[in-house]
Length: 133
Image (tube, rainbow, N blue to C red):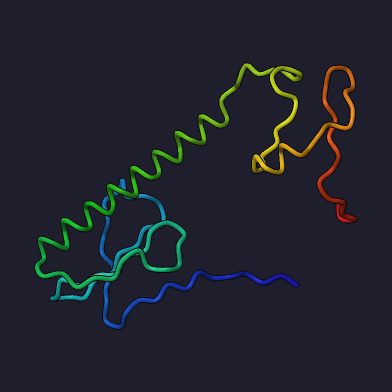
């Protein structure tokens, strides 16, 4: 049996959707109360509101909305740059560099000794055993 989850976003009663610019990030929704500078906004796939504010003036609402959209655009650009950097080819070959990585506190690392050295590579004892591996 399969179920499909639908995204639930709470919209205050009487609020109407705001038309966003074409270059707005995907999934953004803004709803506002007609006649009053009050709005609620959801960004991306989030089901919790990014903000729900009653502003002192219409100008403040428009400025806050523009700043919020710019922040979301910058975040998307950062995510795209990071993703491209991770997917970029690298020059590290198998067997180059340190053959292991150990992240421990210095106290526990200082007490550990390798079990053996095979073909120039140090072999360490497992830290814990599990039957789920």
